[in-house]
Amino acid sequence: MTPAESPRPLRILIVDDELLGRERIAGLLRAEPGIEIIGMADDGAAAVDAIRAQRPDVVFLDYQMPGRNGLEVVRDVGPANMPVTIFVTAHDDHAVKAFELAALDYLVKPFDDERFEQSLKRARRAVELQDVDRLRGQLLAVLQQGVAPASPSAPAAPSYLERVAVESRGKVRVVPVAQIDYILAAGVYAELHVGDRRYIVRESMQTLEERLDPRVFMRIHRSSIVRLELVDLFLRGEGGDYEVQLKSGVKLSVSRSRREAIEQRLGVTS
Image (tube, rainbow, N blue to C red; front, side, top):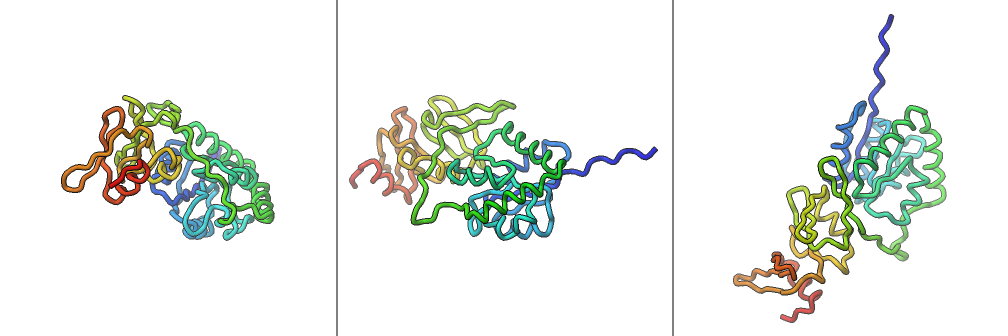
């Protein structure tokens, strides 16, 4: 009797212009059985080449990328040649409506493990049921309807983070942004400081800076972001160094390149 063949692993391509974003998805995929990561791409052009050359079963496709965004990648590859597509986006805005039509699923950063697993299960099922043709038809319909980000002359209102999912020891805690006092860089991670508590998240300072409301938060150093209303003192030190002191007494360094900007925001006169 011939032994049953083991099922072919699901071949997945990861596309994200941020290293941390690629590593986040790759780490979650490596914990799953029956997965083969066939490659990673860091921009739209590389994504088009990889999809054409490697023909993955599934692609996790970042929407916001320099050069070509996610829908432009789909347009260049051609909907008929696209694998099962899961869009990844940093903004839960009008584009999500397009994702709902144009893709199997979408993930809004920062997503938790459970939400990722749901998307992966849907991808597995779509491949197993050979549902790719229907999904390709939806991609084509969206492109023909001209669904795209708003033009520069009519920008959509920005959508800022309201909650941050913090993963720790198999659990996910949701931290309201309204409770965050300041954020510090911690290597490739970031520390959210909420009162006397500290939470580690798998996000870059650049991503957090872009997703936080600039009317409320300001990046004052490459390693720190602060809630402006909590700044109590602006301190000028010897040697041209500057700091802000928060109402809690915490002191944070201000980089020279950002000094004038925060002085203006705080109404400090030189």
